Length: 139
Image (cartoon, rainbow, N blue to C red; front, side, top):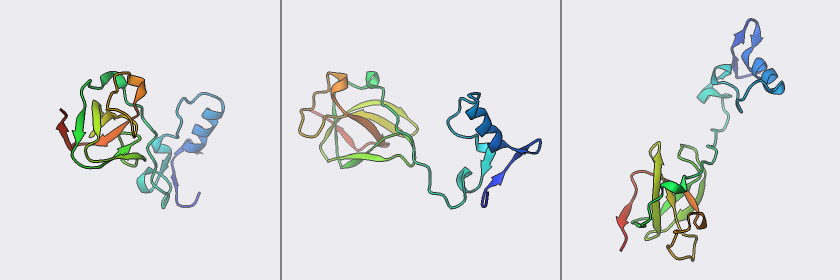
């Protein structure tokens, strides 16, 4: 494997052992251990950076009162670097703040063209905003 440093265990590449354990159903991991492959960023040298998997916002932690955004912001699919932007919210958009994680805050917000009523927790889309948040109290 050109451009990849492979660590061996007893003469067998660790990545090969991981692949065999997945095939046999012995490895619960979805990705090989970081120690199995090394290079730029822990992966193949020159490879594109990994995209963060989407992470659901816990709607039960969301506030019942909205705050307003003081500038337009991108809504992310996960609280992580490399997360996809799922939409952009304009200045003045109402958001309901939810639990935070890793320098990001979960939010729930009305769909475009809808009222700012997210009382029914499943009725509004969710996503993640980078902190600090550009907000002001609504009302």
